Image (tube, rainbow, N blue to C red; front, side, top):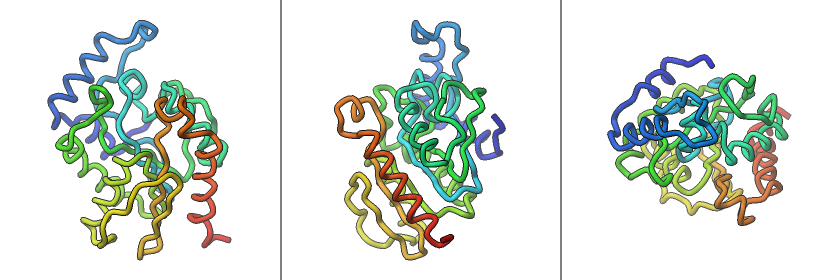
Length: 228
């Protein structure tokens, strides 16, 4: 997996002592089923196509998923759901995401996160999210063809709109998060929300495969309408 200078900067970040400690501790102790793995155990970089039109904003790496494999949404149930949908929508060359060497390639899409370290109980603090905001800003600035922000969950939704407000791209109150909710920006781009494909949402039926597929259908319709 080739890393850009931004990705290397993300991977070397130590701004959040609590998260740095947790990532290393998890990598050392491991889960019983992954004892033969050499865990990544540090901030997880962005993954995908910086020339793409779609930016997917997640919450944070899973302790035994991306924190283990070193690639966003790779090696856990959330990733199984996300990459299946990306593959079905034509944004990924395969639906399998088990390691950073499995041959997965994203097309016209990039995945980032509000927090790049795996947090205890999957809950980064407000300060930890703020520490990562500079990475989100730089990520967005590098995506010159960006047309769509896909926010996976309310925290990612709010972080995306904080960026937009800081750049004077959104000057109103942050809209209420909703699944498949679309907010159009004055510059022609748009933000769409989706429930996060966490087990908490997929096991309970709050998020179904059809619901997630519908989000990507809307993205295809909106982001590529000018190409028709």
